Image 1 (cartoon, rainbow, N blue to C red):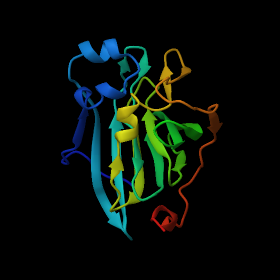
Image 2 (image 1 turned 45 degrees about the vertical axis):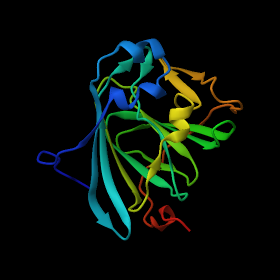
Image 3 (image 1 turned 30 degrees about the vertical axis):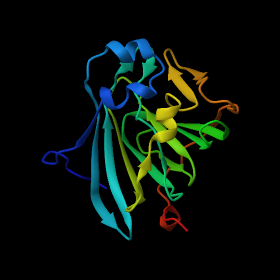
Length: 196
């Protein structure tokens, strides 16, 4: 779906909103409060679902690639992402604040589709040199819960330069990271995104 964002004012996520989820806390304490990514919400609402676009500029947090803050969907909603421009890593984890049951990542490029299953917390990472523009469909009434990521200084793995995954020691139990392939098209029926 084509959306002209020129005259739409986005919500901005700044570094001050993210300091507690960064791998490099020395960097987090000293870096200036710059805008990290733009969130354009409710660009379309259809059948109880909303369509959003997020634009993440290329940047490093010390040696960590720029990422979203991370959240889990209250009410056990799923989410579908589409890469509109650039490349991204979609990281998802299932479990509680101490013990993670499952964790996977999907490396996706323009045109790819990623499904985040219900019950998974997730983070989007921009490992590229250009902007990552990603769209999503999610239940209109969904509210993201950031508390697991804030309490544990981020997700259960960090993605660091030059391209390595490092476990976050704030979690007690973390399984081995597995990798999934993206889909090539959005499912025709998105009703599975609504809570049951």
